Length: 117
Image (tube, rainbow, N blue to C red; front, side):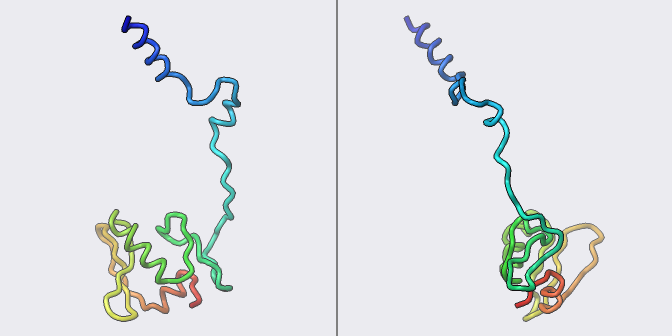
């Protein structure tokens, strides 16, 4: 008496989540993502800057947004990030053996990463 119930539950658990008559090829491949290819940072016209190192695919309108992103997402997983060591002066934090210390001003970082303001 319990065996048919257990069998029915096993069959239900193994059944596909979509009807069998559906288009399985379309369901198997993810939808195409249309992204604008980025070769280098932009932003000369006030656009968001994309393609920055360790940006994880995000774009940023200001240097502060980018630096905050690096501190929040790159630093905890030991990727390079920039830490302000005194007003307007930043240290490149790189947790790699043999990494050479690097210090840059805010203006240098803005030029380096393509921010205009």
